[in-house]
Length: 307
Figure (cartoon, rainbow, N blue to C red):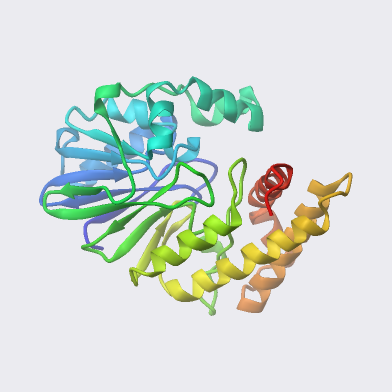
């Protein structure tokens, strides 16, 4: 729709991690880059859309977590005319990704980073544009507006597509897997993965996006969702519930384990109330990675002393 092509980056499992190609009058912009392993899929997407690598003007990163941005350097090597737009806090990590790689290795382990993300290539500084709040990117006359949207990460932007009246949300508008769609519509949960979860900022960013009255949100995890107002209300409720769970277990020696279990119970019960018919164990299994990362993220938030 509206010249927006969804790319399954191949990260994790099918229909887990998306990027997007926006095409307007023969010019293209990628939203997020997947991992280095994703490169063939991006080139295939160009071919399917009927444009050449030289026709791509922009790669716009929602944030620099490696499932969104790890492949940016490799992708840019194939796009001779493209600039890369990224939050000012993330720009230096695209130019010199060493700290980014070290940070990911600290969370996931060096072997997993190497296996899952491949070689992370720097982007030349003269090709990087800092996407400050309010930066309007012109794609062949189509306005793509970058908004500073912290809460999941302090280097996060969401991109409002005026033509489609939709946002490319990265992770600030949660995650919604198509396997959990039901008669009640899409099921959504927040993503609070390490290390910069901030609940008040997340609430504010969601509210800010709703102020544009978007018709749809294009999530990284995964794909296009509508019923935006309902999903936003679900996110607000769950952020508050997750914060309450984290605070209840803040001093427990096994707090991360306890928080993760309560997160699992929260998500499963909400999914079932919405009409998801999968067995509880299958819902928890599908969300297992996200439950673990969300628990880790709120523990980091607790340790920062933020309330």
